[in-house]
Image (cartoon, rainbow, N blue to C red; front, side, top):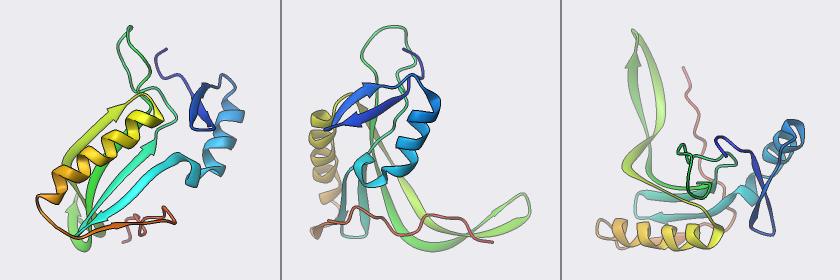
Length: 136
């Protein structure tokens, strides 16, 4: 289903056709949507439940989880003549999958990739990343 909405029930994706039910669950369950957040040296490996099917083909399972890597640190960027302070850079790593179990394995695989750059690994138990907002 293209752009099907899903919620998690005991780590299992469940199709949610009602927009308000989905939005309420999505907004109120940040900690349940984050699969893992791990710090590897200066990098953060983040795996999350997307809530929307990112499989844009008519066949195959829904793509509902994503792992990305970013580095935390403030820098300035200029867009359209305006300068913004931006506190994260994303590396060119983005992996997606269908199930919670695949997401856990994918997270570990990306950690192995990133560990080639740093030997310090710290699991972040509260699953809350540093602030990720643009400020002017």
